[in-house]
Length: 499
Image (cartoon, rainbow, N blue to C red; front, side, top):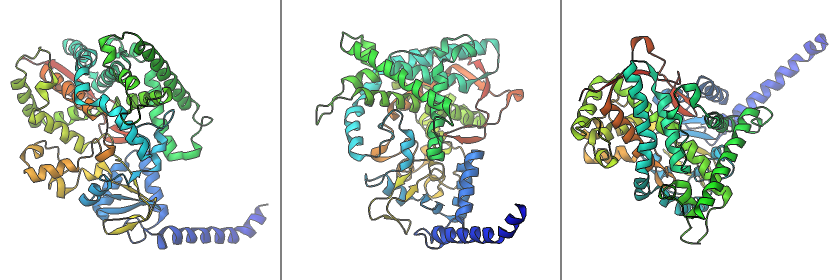
């Protein structure tokens, strides 16, 4: 047998070489993207992608390629990454550029306002869902946000401050966002912050969310290989989360048919049940309500929790900036123990600058919003990109463009949002992809801003934080669906602020 293989190895080697040459000709020599800079061989590009996923450092790898190749470079045989002002503006200015096929991986139960690639369906969902996230609607939820989440988080941190214990603030901020999203969506907090011990806090929903988030990434990376036989636990969590949402929808529908309490009437789910398409009079079906409920839980927890945590981390790494923000908060909020309202915070220049800068330099959604080219293709950065090919305006790279954010884009410098000229500030905001741009911008960003301002401002007004020398963990940003610390925790100590 071995002699037979030995006799045939030249033929096998020749066949493999012929296949490799054919693939190189197809993907590199004859490709419509052949003239675009980037790694010379499709095998190298695939290797970079796989290693980036395995090592969880894809944004850093692609940033290095941006510095090497310029504002447009090849990602794969049918996709490119761009970081160019005109390209970013073009890609977000028209519905001609639909979300890429990748977003099918984010269909939980069925198509939803985030995952849909159907322009007409998205317009309909915006008409129905949009009013629920208006300023007036979110203002009506502020008391729930504060009392369910922010106030309970302050109580928890107060206990740690009193005992001088080190604690994982990322974990408790995540509990806060989950409690808030449970209350504002379903009128029922998960009460994670009320548990005395961490092991008492975690209900099944946390495992479901963790595995369903991973499932979205696995579907994107593995395609058909991602199935219930290979990942049974992940698919079981997907089913459990959908059933949880189904039960919540049916309970809320019962309340909607009765004289619901005022707090229930302010919740997102109640408003979605009552919402009608102003053009057709149609309401959302039960399956649509389930899909929207699931995506609200998915989108409304990690994003806010990680942004708040990254902001605190960056502030503690930059003591001068930390003190400038504390000074602004002490002036705006003279009584450290008084209840804070969003109206007191929304116009504070340095608070807003700090949050913008944090989301710029460490964007939780670092990959951005990949766009599929329309019929006939499009010219991007002087290169024709064919129909159905994908262009990535990668947030992590766009937020580091020197022509937009100045000569020091790697520096955490909130002052850039205050010192910039009116023209430069306008450009910075138009290139800010923290909540995406255009018609596909995050529908829940108003809610996110309220949570971010309330959480960060009240924490820093009430407490002084520091990282003990014996509790430092690896805070290297890694891409695990969202951009999070490699250690998956952030250990700090808190002390009550003196005044």
